[in-house]
Image (cartoon, rainbow, N blue to C red; front, top):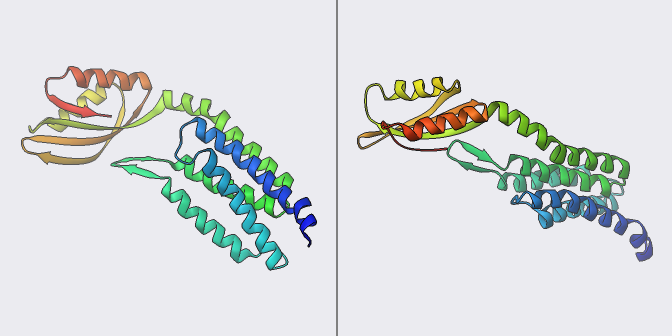
Length: 213
């Protein structure tokens, strides 16, 4: 394949992957995610280029290269996931990195319609499902509460009664003792307005030393 053929065929694929990656990356950038516009675009182009090279070297898509792309993207995705105590964030960004690479690979293999349909589906999920997610969260938001209370025999029951008063579901995640205080971590789920009621009750309680959500 000469240089002109490369321009006419392969570079079109690289440009297509750049467009696809930039569209997904723009959505991530708009939502201030760690893997934003440039990162997602580069991942998509990189996956396309590796697929093109494997196609040229192996005279057909080399599935060993495909497997290595998947593994490499997996490491990138893992780097986007953050764990702060019981809270985990970055899962959607990690999944976006993974699917962006898959779109790039599809373009590199010449599967334009497949890549386009996947791109549209991804955009529908990232943009359209936000409203559905908000509705679900409003009805059943899941939050972690770290509550510090005086060390008394009925401390746990006291906190559970407050949670029950707000008609929320709860599960104790951990407990630790700090001097004469106890620190409970609860995973609590329920409507947003019920969480607001719980925050108000915890703030007004003389028994609660401090808490964070």
